Length: 439
Ligand SMILES: Cc1cc2nc3c(=O)[nH]c(=O)nc-3n(C[C@H](O)[C@H](O)[C@H](O)COP(=O)(O)OP(=O)(O)OC[C@H]3O[C@@H](n4cnc5c(N)ncnc54)[C@H](O)[C@@H]3O)c2cc1C
Image (cartoon, rainbow, N blue to C red; front, side):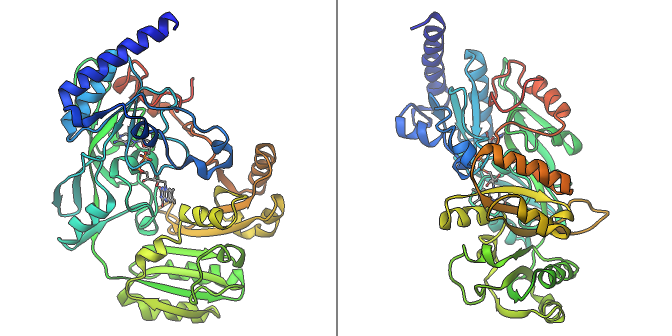
């Protein structure tokens, strides 16, 4: 063993002892199966990331039971100089939750209480699932403004690793007034829970936990609606897209609106209301808008195949990255890209010619409040090699299509605020190392 390895090993032993004494023996494990589970997420959805797996293995996993214990676990990791990666339910699909430098994984799943529900907001512990939050909100005739299609994932994981989903047509993304307050466990020389509010929450969103571990979050609730699922089919793309746009003018707006071409439909489980060979439009709409929604479908030459009173959860499972999951189950050779911009529709034919077997799924979103609802897309294509995929991405950008690369665990975009927050909340650079690119 090298001198450094000996030092790390004795630091780990000391960390495990301290965690056990602070959190209790039942809240700390070095058991191999638990370490493996805590080191895995949905990165295997990407053939590029899958080729790099396994990419790290937790040495120890802690399961804090409340916000104070999260702060204690993170502080102890700092004290012993051990890397620490936070974890919700591990459904992130860019490998965000993989402990690339091993060390401690702080699994927040036991810290899962809805603390308070107020008019227009809910305050919950980081590990609380969306199922639990929706259930608490609905008792007060409210519902959560945005949630991912992975309803079992945790609020802390969604804020740190996700972006939008169900509810994003009306309410935008997690950085659009969704979060009013966070309590953040800092990785510093004392156990610290720091409260940040309003715009100060922004650097902690979609930051993969490198700016501190979210211990509790207060997020937006909206009035509860009576959601139903409408399934329609069309003979051509232009009509399906036009109907989709009109459905996104219903008042109130749909909670989900998805459009698929026949090649994507062919990867779905059989459903007579999603006929093979036709373009499918599916919308989660408020029950009082059903007549207007039916009229929008028929006005564009479509057929209303079914309206289901309890169809909302099912249609969520046919939206966003669930499409990639289903498509890759049916055709493992496929891979995905997140795309946006009108060019993905107006230059659809050229787009489909760039990479083999290209098909496009659309979901309704509001990207810019001034412009109102529009579409974002998931492009599926046959994966041949990383080089060919990235060459295709370049050409997509030349067409004016915006592409978000889901095949990297490195944080992207303007990271100025993220870096500043990381310096404050993680001066030693121990939080989820390997995700924040070096300057
Ligand atoms: C089939 C499928 C469908 C999906 N659909 C959507 C969708 O509709 N919308 C969407 O946005 N995403 C979607 N995702 C991605 C993922 O489900 C979401 O981002 C999800 O909310 C992550 O939550 P989680 O609890 O699983 O977090 P994890 O995967 O455990 O963690 C995600 C990231 O956040 C960090 N983290 C976890 N907890 C904390 C914390 N308390 N404090 C700080 N950092 C933390 C982790 O280190 C990791 O970097 C989908 C994924 C799959 C596989």
